[in-house]
Image (cartoon, rainbow, N blue to C red; front, side):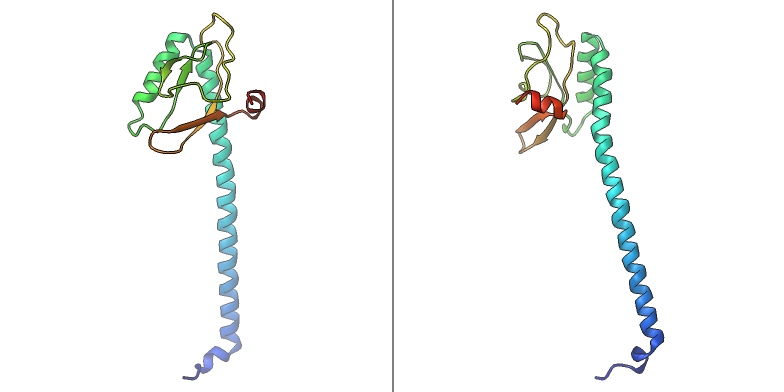
Length: 143
């Protein structure tokens, strides 16, 4: 079956070229917007917990316990993790069973919860949660 005559015309070729260029530029623009959005979201996901942690660290010990309980109570899907540990590494509150490996308590003796450390946790199964220090300086210090 031979191709129709209009396919061989310069008008059709120019239309096809311009439409192809439009599609290409649209894809490049979409990729750029996606890249910028992903970078922004990742930077905000690092800054927000740090800001939340600084507010948390400024609270009294009683307020910290109430804040952890409130945070976990408002999580119906049980995807958020929170933990408060004593100077000896025992759990005071939260849903993390133990102090994450490689993260030493940095609390002076006798002062419970005077400082705080941020960790990144990810689920590796239905029951397993792996945590590591979120701050690169803490990661190097606690290796």
